[in-house]
Image 1 (tube, helix red, strand yellow):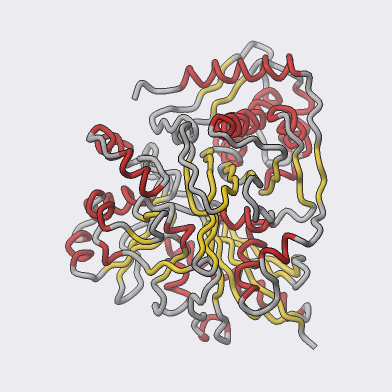
Image 2 (cartoon, rainbow, N blue to C red; image 1 turned 120 degrees about the horizontal axis):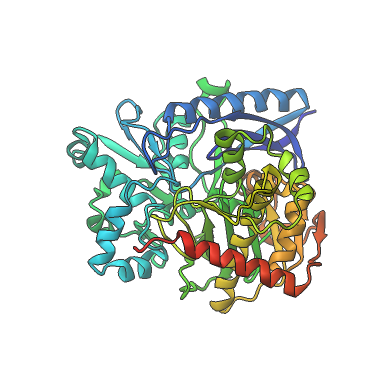
Length: 494
C-alpha cells in the first residue's frame, strides 16, 4: 500500500531541488541539480531560464521515482522559489525573451536613484512596504522592456508575460495554462499594494510596466493548476506557492506575531511575523506579506542581507582558498581573533543600509593574516549583519527573545555559536534543516489532507538544538565596534 506524500520544488539561486515529505514532515527523498550563475557585466547577475526549467524537471522526475520506490505516492506539489528574480516570455511559445535578471542584480541602481530624487519613494513604500532598490522586480521588468529589441511594443500588444520564478515554473509545468503567482511573491515586485492585496495601477504606470504582463494573484494555499501529464506521466495538482523566505517562516512554525526566523543561504533573510498589522519600519526594513490564507493576510517585517553563503562561495570559486564550504569551520576555529573584517558588499549592501554602490572590502590585514583569518572573517560577517538587522527591528519596537535559524549554513557549528554570541540570543537550530521546502509542502499538503492547518502544526512538538550565547559583553562590543568601522569604510556617497 502506498502512503500519501507531498513534493516540494525549491528553486533557489544556486540550485534546483525537489524534496518529498511524508505526513510526519520527514524527508522521504530528495534530488538537487546546481544552477549556473551568469555575470555578464559588473553588478549584473543572470540565470538562463531554460536551465531553471530543465534542472527543475530533472529533480522532480528523480524525486518522484525515488518516492515511488520508497512506497509513497505524491498527491500534490508545492513551489518555493528565489524571490524578485524577473523573467519575460512569449505567451504563444513560452520562450523567454532574454535571461532572467536575478534578485542580486544591480543594473537598475541609477533608475532607482532617479525615482528617489523625484520624491516618489515615500508613496512607493506606503503602498508596497518596500524601498526603491534594484533588488526588487519592477525596475528589472522596465529594463528588459527598454533594452530587448521590440519587447515594449510586444508587451503592450499582449504578446508577453511576466513572472517571478514561481510564475515561470507554473506556466511551464501546466503547459501554459496557468499565469499565476501567490501574494508573497507578488509583494516583492514593487507593483503590489500589500494593504489592498492587489496590483497597483499607479505603481505600474510609475515603473512603466504594462498591467497586462502581470499574473493573477492567489492565496499561498490554493489551486494553481496541474502538471502537464506528458511531464511526469500523470497530472499532479499544484496546491501551494510561497517565496523562499516566507516558506521558511512557515516551515519554522512562525505562525504568531513576534516569532522570528533567519535563513542562511546565498543571502541571509530575517523575518518576523507581525500578525494582521503592517509595521512601517523607521529603520529601512521591509514590510511584506508573510502569507495569505483563506483571503486573510498575515504580515511580516524583513531584513535582507545580500551575501551570506555567497561569501563562502566567493572564497571557494574566485579566491580558490578552499575547495569545500565545510572547510571554513575548522579554519575559523584555528584562526583565533585576528582583527580582520570582511564586508561582503559584492552587489551592494542590503538592510539597513540599502547602498547599491557599496563594494566589498577586507580590512585589518597584517603580515600574519592568512586563509584561516579570511575564512573566520567571512563567517563573522554573516553574524555581524544579522546583528544589524535585529538592532533595526529593536528600534522599530520589536524585541526578539530567540532566533530560529535554517538554511545550508546552519550545519556549521562554529558559525552558529558565533551567531548566538554576536546577537546575544538563544539560537534554535532544527534537527531537520529543510524548512523552506517543508513550508511549501505544508501549503500544498493542506489541500490533500496530508498536513493540517497552521494551528494544528503549531501544536506539534519540534526537534531543536539550542545554542546559548557565552561571549563576554566587552568582547562582543569590541568586535561590533570594529565591524561598524569597517562598514563605514565601504559605504558610498549616494
